[in-house]
Length: 113
Image (cartoon, rainbow, N blue to C red):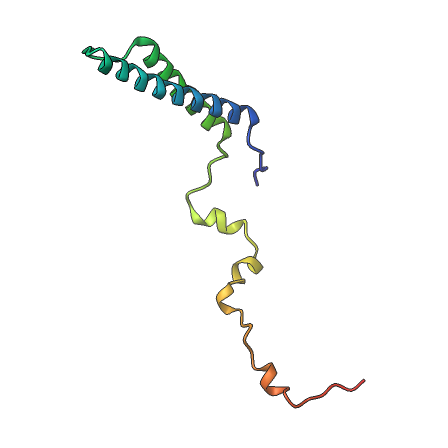
C-alpha cells in the first residue's frame, strides 16, 4: 500500500506564480490591443515579450500541477476492491432502516423505577 503524501508547497507556489504570469500576460495582451486600437495601428501579432511570458507561465503552471498531483491509481477495479475490508463493502446506506416498528410494538409499555 502506498503512503499518502501531502501536497508539495513548492508546487503550489509554482502554480500560483504561473497563474499570476498567465493573468499578467492576458492583461498585457488586452493593453497592447487597446493601444493599437487607439492609434489605429495594424500589427499582425503580439510583441515577443508577451509571447515569452505566456509560454513561461504555461510551463510554470504545468510544472506546478505535476508537483502537486498525487500518485496514479490503478485502472483495474480488483486492486481497489482488495484494499477494502468486507465490512466496508457491506455497509450500504440503502439497507439502514431508521423508521422501524419499535414505537408501535412498545407503545403501551411503561418503565418502572
